[in-house]
Image (cartoon, rainbow, N blue to C red):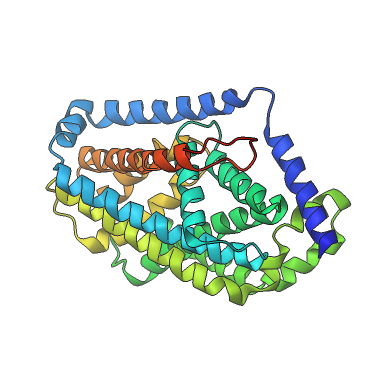
Length: 330
């Protein structure tokens, strides 16, 4: 056990060092530029004045309700992370995981790169318990479980709900990717055996996640929580649309939001900016929703994610950084 922890700790440390690129803001600037460029194209193509006019009609109560639901979903996700951390023998009070999770949400707003918040919560948890490697593993597993659940949710919606409105060019790849993700989950113990055939350096990195691959049954409760989270995201988007006085059936959101979420999760722009709005314009447009309405809805989703990140301000200020001598405690 000590040897495994030592290997995982070294791999995590090397990963942290390798992630510190010589120009860390270059990737941030490129993603920001690409996202803003895509958004500018969409606003020019579909009418920026119409989009901003629609945004001004959003009722604050609906926006607040959507953000509140998102906050509740993130609290549930923190509990999911706690379950995953227990698999690698890191245990702590629920409030600790909630605090670190919201520190990560806040960090994501300002730190360059796609994994700034993930790195922050891994460092907080790892330093607090003196086990950086397993902490990194728990965060990687948490992110992976969320993606797998998203792929399953999108595939199930495309298969069970779609009545032909979405073309086969959209639904077939979505279902196929979901099936591949499910097959990978079933075959996880077999995939874990590949570790011993890897080069030594890669083997040390693989050692971070193989505890989860060897025990896929322990991932069922976290996967269920991840599916519930994606359902709450759909409902939050529906609430935002109600605030805009858009009459779009909930079933349409169950189809479009998870599929758009797959595109928005691509590490190309900041928080999916531009990708999500473009996907919304295409997918919701297939159900007769005006392009300007769809883009406005995507921007509201982005705005709610920014507000959600700001809810981590207080935890960031008051939670002591375990890696500092005196911390930031308040």
